[in-house]
Length: 256
Ligand SMILES: Nc1ncnc2c1ncn2[C@@H]1O[C@H](COP(=O)(O)OP(=O)(O)OP(=O)(O)O)[C@@H](O)[C@H]1O
Ligand SMILES: [Mg+2]
Ligand SMILES: [Zn+2]
Image 1 (cartoon, rainbow, N blue to C red):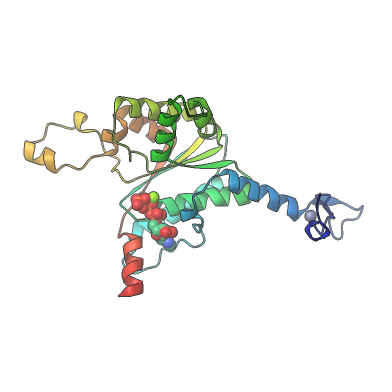
Image 2: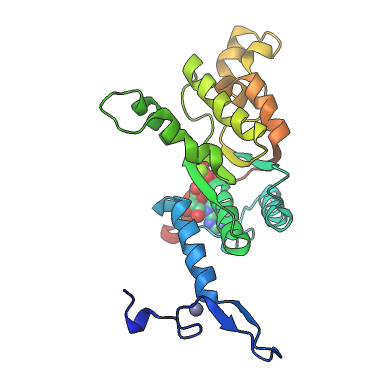
């Protein structure tokens, strides 16, 4: 039962409030209802504590050494929210080095979609997800693979953070394919962040000299397979984020 203090003064708990000045006592949804739905969606999105502060509005593009790509990425993020059409299914692939603000921007998009559009979103750490799926094969664990995956399949907008962060194996590739193909087939929007350059796998690049092959950094193609990398190009618009590690900058700025 609700105490008097909790009852909304605008609508007395009915969820509807009178539109001021409306001729025939018109009513509209009360803000408290919108707020409640917003907080329920935020909770359901499972955004980790570490990223709770991330908003589009506190993503700065104006700091010493800021790369131009960061400002372009922010403009792209705002446009994505403005033009978001859940039926279209086109997502974003944020690619860039450590600490360039990929997760911040992606979480900012999620929150903005929740607040302004009431979209059902889900944050999903790639490494964590694969661990949970692997765990579900263990008999002593209650959740089945499908139970772990259902929210990942069904979220209107999925944020898959740190794609490629798990050492590739046949199983990893199969699992990534299952997730991406299911969302692709259902025309659902996926936002992805990755540290790995959006470049082909070693197997399809022209043969390199042993020295160059050893120095070559792993690519997204190496980590998730060429088929899935090409699928991603159909599912997402690519956004590159370059520049310094924002965490390092902050540390040196506050202590130096
Ligand atoms: N442009 C920015 N404005 C404000 N805060 C930022 C910005 N870029 C990064 N940050 C902050 O710096 C920290 C690191 O950013 P974030 O986690 O988004 O980086 P990332 O690109 O996802 O890094 P990683 O590759 O390690 O996952 C976060 O706390 C984030 O809020
Ligand atoms: Mg990140
Ligand atoms: Zn109310």
